[in-house]
Image 1 (cartoon, helix red, strand yellow):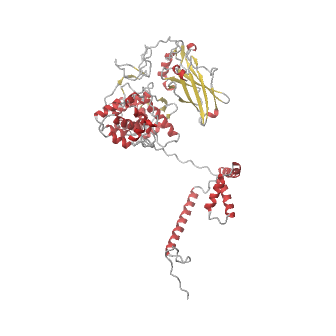
Image 2 (tube, one colour):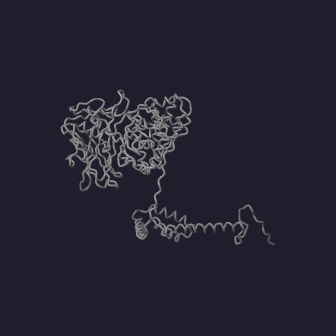
Image 3 (cartoon, one colour):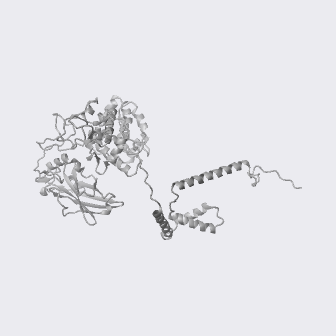
Length: 613
């Protein structure tokens, strides 16, 4: 007699007959069936929505289809598609280009047929971009109002005392977007209201109150010098936490620890923010010598960082816009007058002390009533900053830090007080030679008859003419330099010796005027046209017998290729028709961008630097 053994519940085997599904299996099967139907339906809807024409396959897909079919036929023991696909991938990796060309040609033919038969797609309406920025004046205002008296004095000792008068809490993002679209990073200018307004460190000084003279700000150095500071401020590769710095600033004391925390904080959230949420750890290199903080040229550093961050944003390297967008906003308010005619009035330096939330709201209201941004008039063109309307300033109860009367109809600044040695403006009197104050002009009266070829002041005998076609000015060299600075400030580029300068020449531009910030010397970047490209060279404006020659370098790049010329300038009394016979850089047409512009990097050395070149 055969006795059935009891079922074994421990071996994990299913004791139910596979021919008779239980209730649980039935429910699972129904769910899978419903899920499959939903997935298939969604695929059909998506295919129908896309027009029913799938995109053609690439060369790898053509190969894998053929390989998997053959592999499955020759390997019946294969467990499924996954193994066959893996084998196809391994085979594709070891194939040569000649072996792949068969499938590449097939894919190209299919793709060409697809392009010729596929209907043209309707362009989608472009959505307005949302401005993402880490520039947050409101957070700084919240910190400033809790500072003690000794802490405010510490801020002033570092050269950032003007920020204590900051009253603007929010950025007008629509205005910032509008300005970013008109910000020429190559020329460092704003192209608004039919004018091109160049931006200089001096403008940053007038708007933000930061010093525009001093040592270069350097944020690089050996890592071991800032290792202790990185640990002290919990600096990671992502940066230094803004909230951590706010906690440090909330503690009592105004020593070096407070100064370091404040410097990191104000650079990271207002003056030089990056695309990151946290403060850049590169700023730690500035904290190694706190006694020299007030000696740096912070205005130039702010402007350089703004140009760099906007350029990176346009290149798609970052989603957020870095840099001090507050400066652009206030610069626009001060440079463009709306709602009436401009009248003489006081200029308050720094300008940020006047722009409260109420004043900005009133300005934005007027902009909207006039039809939007750019409907005003650029005022005080020679300085690049506007006076605003007297009616706009009457209701603002702020004591001006400095007042300088301006004669708008002539565009020249007139001295109103006897003692204005600290005012960083270049005042000039039409009856006396030009006088430069600080780094914006000449401190002493210079003799026009100086012919020393090694004198960096660049003073020559003889007459020079204005290089612009619509100007008939003729005079001594220094008179020409001062004439161009005051009358044609927006028709050239200012540069510093021994410092690379990116420039751009449009299709119809045959020359560009370059003026040195140190001594006012004028140069011409000349562009000619040949059969295969453009010829480019630099000449210096001055009498032919002046004896002055400057070394310069021109660089044009395209991808990994570059063209370079290093030569000496010719000295000419002005602009001449056609390029004189001399050294030049021949740039093929293939190096031009899509708009036909020629982008170059220019560097000119002064005589004092020639021994080091």
